Image (cartoon, rainbow, N blue to C red; front, side):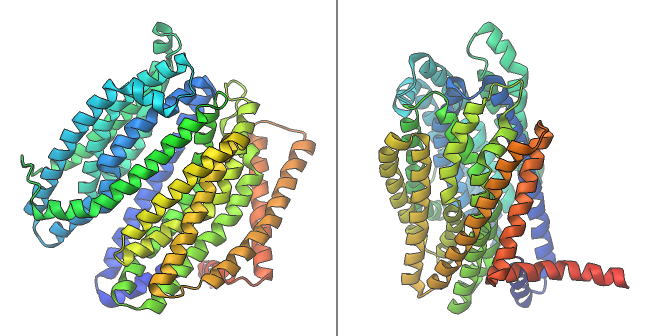
Length: 553
């Protein structure tokens, strides 16, 4: 990845004398976003620990997790996907052409329509919450359904502020202002924690069985804090609001044309989530929460490696596609995909081998309500989720290859098709494997998505190096299998023969197993002379050689 970034920087520098300064500012922004993401994830983990420690993994947490789904669906449809795919590029293009006032005109029109749809959506959602919850989680018992309905109605309020925050983030990032959105994402999780810590006990006292609603109120509090910190920055920059609903404006027409495929993809994705929760609600108590906790752990390597590589390689692929340098385009694409696979497959085997130790360390406390049985149920789902990590990580680079080719329809069509595969497999496998079947179906659908994208890219731009990719994937899988077995044996040895216990012992078990796994994997990959391993070792040599030379002087 670093080599590719160096190449991208070099290409940019050749085309623009100001590139170093621009590259420095982009790196500063990336570092800020990375730090805020880490801080937000730490707070998110603390939030989960507090919830599980106080309430355990049962019908209460199942209701809390299910109550997120419908408000999140409304937010993603109205703002979340729209901003990431269409609004920011359109608004930024007006700024680039020094047509700022025209850009604000488009923004105002979109904002006005979103607020109208939002008010209608929230009102309908609150009114029809019983029917929506009954469809979403029909397997819940009566009291759990009532709790889910009430939590859903509370969290519908957050949609208003999350939509306002989403629009504010789009505007600020168009102006290359990253601090306020970064702080806002941290405040969101902080608000949830504060709401739960301060309100759970009083609510439980006056409304027995509803203490977890403190965290739902905290969700609203976090959304308000997220928006306010961004609104202050927007106010300082100056707002240019216009009361208009003119859908005939060219900028609005351009945005609507771009956003239709995204609506379809997002709708299908959310529908898939609803189907999974529908099926999981008929399982034993606490398994909806087990699935959610396992999927959060699965997303860690995808976020750290898949999304990072996809974003880093995207500008270079876009430039090469525009210049029709197809050999370089395919080489860059394959470097990105092979890098992701080389990193995420061993991470998947390691996470599967250490599934119970990791979950035990993160969520199981002596004074908490998260039990050893909860750890086992969550680990069972996580093992099957890890099968698809490499595919979902690679999809981020593969889909961006299509975007670089200005083709947004194929990735969305493939995503919808893979969701259909997921739904069918989920319905079949949940009968035999419970939450593990739902996780396995999700993983298989991701692998299907990845393979179809590769086939379509081969068809569209010629051979992209599929056989070399297959060879590298098989080599990485075989080495990872050996590594995973060694890590699992080490964990078993630790649990059977290490005399001390507690959180420090659990952390030591995980860290020593990770060190053993990474060392063994790299040794085997270097012995097999895998290009990815040699490239990584060259990067490490370049990083440490200057330091040694300086010390020698």
